[in-house]
Length: 290
Length: 250
Image (cartoon, rainbow over all chains, first blue to last red; front, side, top):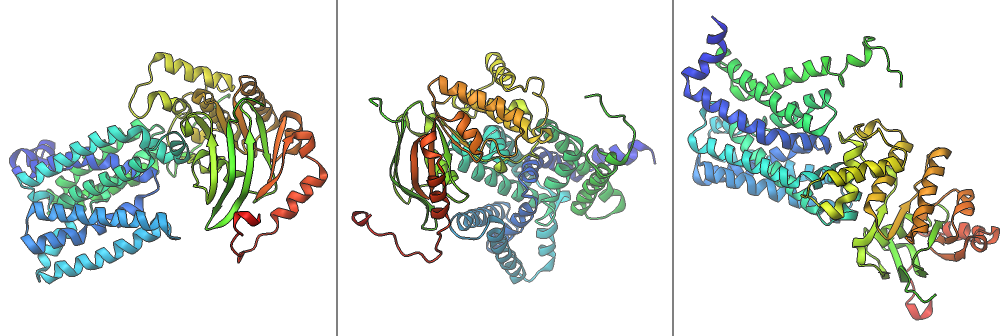
């Protein structure tokens, strides 16, 4: 088998592979930059929690309308936003910190979601919700994912300066402007939108993977934020393409394959990158004179 | 003094969960004053600055600002609130001092970039522009934050313990900058712990121990008797304190 047959031919010969590739490109451009900010705000695990929180909404949409893209999307966004804002409200007005209050809400949503999905009585659908269907993206799903990616890039560009300040010096942002809540909640809105988008392609359990793994890998290689954003997106797309090929040739589910390839990139980065495990222990460079 | 005060505290009570951290404060800070806010730990010094900056809503009373409300005030909280790991350069962090001009969307043109570099030069940080803030020492980071204050260019400046864990050389440089701001007529309130520095550099002192102990010329405020009184007052915290009596009995 030539390299061409191995890498290029599957995408030339099969429409579902091309759709999968387009879907992962959109996720790499939209969801991964959001993941970079999740990572830098130390919210990686909260992203995971929020991805579970959208499950009951999507499941409710499914229960009412069947496998309807619109109903599951609307339900997912509504549930995600409800949990985010309820958790934010509790964190601001009670003794609980945001992570504790978010954990409480997402655990409830996850339980409710699994129960709602199981009401329909077919486990096959549950698997689809949990692990997505990147190899079965129809036009409407692809359009939705691309739209959310565009919205998300546009939103990040608008929020960029206040969001960066909110991440590294929130007190300063509060002192000079009233944009702190806008940056915080605007960002959470982008997180929810991208989780719903990722959920169609990769499922609720895997959606966070393409946000956080490339972000963590890129953090190990870069020192500046623009470089980190670009590298993370590139790594996410590479992981997406390689994961689709792995899925094609080895006949394994595509969602986990994509996340596993992202994981391999992460481990390589962990080993080889300047910020990783080995670099500080290698006596290669002499130290600088000043 | 004929000019209206820059800041007036009217029966100001600030606190957390109904416990006052600053209690019935009445004072007027004249425009152009350089004031050291001193007092024991837990005296409400940081709380007072938060109250002036609008971070904390008063439980009672008011803070009155002469200049156009909170928009014309620079507030530098304690350093611990900064996320040092974030991948942002010294230049970018400092440039945010121009927020009032550029906001969230306007660009940093060549003239503004020059002003950022000049401000960094003025605090001895020329050449550090592209370093990430995580790679700076505590003193260097504090210099960069002062450069940001230069760019903020506000008539009222609030500094919360700017010299905690900073070496003498850096303190000297930054004190010189504060004194320069003082000659420019800005109103400056600085929370201070080092009494030696207060006596050397600050003409006016506000001694706080939840309530106002003394406010006036430093030599008259920083006396053994008053400092001891502040210490005693600040140690009397009662978890189950009864409600504060109504104003007419105070």
